[in-house]
Length: 393
Image 1 (cartoon, rainbow, N blue to C red):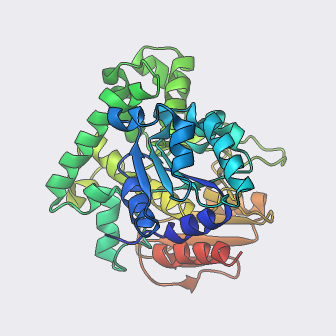
Image 2 (image 1 turned 180 degrees about the vertical axis):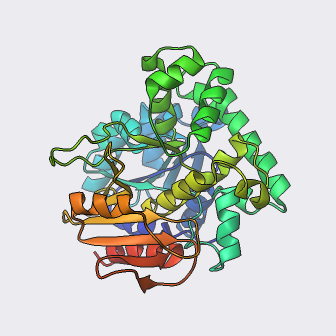
């Protein structure tokens, strides 16, 4: 089992809150991690997709009161959203008995914002933690390992598969399962064949500005339908909408978000890219690498930190603008090459945004200054730097 960086975050949250929600897409390793955390606590595990486990909750208040000395793990909470209201009373009674910490570990496959619609009654009683696929800090510190992570993506079964061919087959099965079963489980009636076409089109346009009208014409649906389906994939943590950074500088700025399929391995599976050799010659290679870097960096940042991109109609552009919780701005340019060089558009964009720090994150391991205001750094070192910043806080 590969150690996950968020294990300590979950342990600390269980020490301060009655409930902790661990949020991440299916097959990202939530259940494996939750069981590892629960084992020394003699945890009680319930899979809410299993009928027998749901039947055990026919009288949920009585069930939870009888298990008040154990951590209860509730997997796939979206299957029984009515439990949130019940948990509030159970937690409040436990607090009055002096048993108000570490009662529930809740696992969900939808976005935090979506779950909060059901979990508002637990305000002040629950902590939310994102769980992403494997990151560059969780695998072997070697360039070949990072290349494999980029090709296969960070879902554990895919990354750890015996071969690239097996990995691709697993990812295609994952996509089919999501389209045919999991999307419907969240109440959506989108035909699987249609959503497959749109998801594949988004992979072809990885990192592009969202043009709902253009996609709508290609798919022969309305622009409103495209926006709704993109929202659905974002709620399922499969797609990221990266918003534009807006400042009042009297220039024409891009106002629509960029859209990324969040896991690079899924990008490659949707495009039937099976090897690094195929990927190197594919038109998506640069944008796939950009999305891979952005997801790796954002996975270690806490929710108060806000990510953006910046682009003007004249071509000034920053791949990633990070607004830290103290308001400081960092500008990040992503390069696939082992050396770091930036184009004039990045410098023009930095003149507009005026970031406090600027970096080029490249595919190598070296760190060196490019100018007095711009520094080149490798992915692993920069990711570790970001995590250390917020681990100290």
